[in-house]
Amino acid sequence: MKVKKKAIVVIVFTLKVLIMMSSVSSAALYLLGDSSVDCGDNTLFYPIFHHNLSLHPCNGSDSSLLPHFLAEKMGFPYTPPFLTQNGTLQGLLNGLNFGSAQAAIMNVPTGNHPLQSLNQQLRQVFETFQLLELQLSPENAHHFIKSSVFYLSFGKDDYTNLFLRNSSGIRFKYGGHAFAHVLVNEMVRVMRNLYAANVRKIVCMGILPLGCAPRILWERHNTTDIGVGDATRECVGEVNLRVLEYNTMLEERVVELNSELSEAQIVFCDVYQGIMKIIENPTRYGFEEVKMACCGLGPYGGMAGCADPGLACHDASTHVWWDLYNPTPAVNSLLADSAWFGQPMPNICRPVTVQELATAPILPRLV
Image 1 (tube, one colour):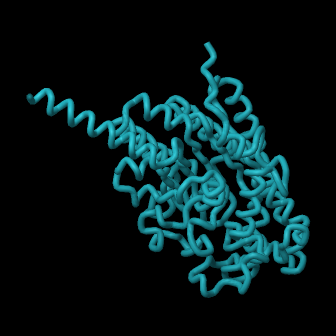
Image 2 (cartoon, helix red, strand yellow):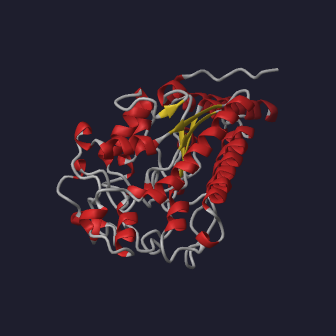
Image 3 (cartoon, rainbow, N blue to C red):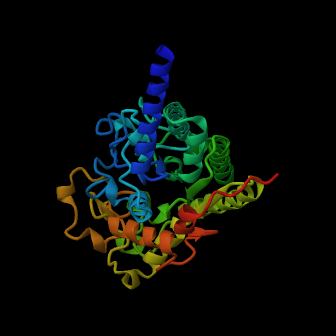
């Protein structure tokens, strides 16, 4: 009798799992990154340890960020922060946002507060995989993981630490090329680790043109004798060249990984190229202000971040930059369209669009 009861319990549990999986997508979107994926909701004590950056790095909510526009296009539900999930199967199957504002590839503490690093987020991903295997089965969990899309967006904060004054001193430890090499190697290591854990579909984002961001412009204005009018004509070339070096190196390694790992489907998305197209021809894309932050104080709005959205400009949709480093929802929406459809800015994501990646079948293993 006890054996029969145990069998009934197993059958009931299996039916519950099948019903649960049928009520959600057979895949999900998982996010890892910095303020490009998180508005501070997934960062412990963010208002306390924001280090004079924006208390509100997003205009409204996380849903104004590029990956959440993409999630909507994929038909996935809103991707909730990892810290809000309670370990339920449905919560895991709906996807999670492991990202953390100010997260960096390198685990460099800022002041007395170690910021959430890429490695910390990776550990949380593996914890999630273990939960999926426990609540489904290893076979079902592996298939779900292979079908899901993993979105990686890092590097911005590593480079702001490199270029800004009063940073962690990282500038004195690495040269520009060596720094890019270290960061790219870390990103490649993480993608290999994800692949070993059955992840197959990855969107790997490049870094946006930080040399055009309000904070960098303010720093350059504050350390030179040029007038504001002169500085607004150009982005800071030295910074953009370093970012381009990283992006180029990362894309080259993505191409290598796609060739080396038989089932890998990794897409590199060049947000640098997309935002530069907007900055160089703003009226074509419906923008007016390409230098000034919508929410911030001082020259270019780059001296202090967004302390209150009530202090923001009247119409954020006409601005490229929301705050010190982050683009406005209007820019994110345009980038999401280009990443998904390949229009209005073609070839932002390579070798295929995010739509083609999301809908592609899992590649067969080569013997």
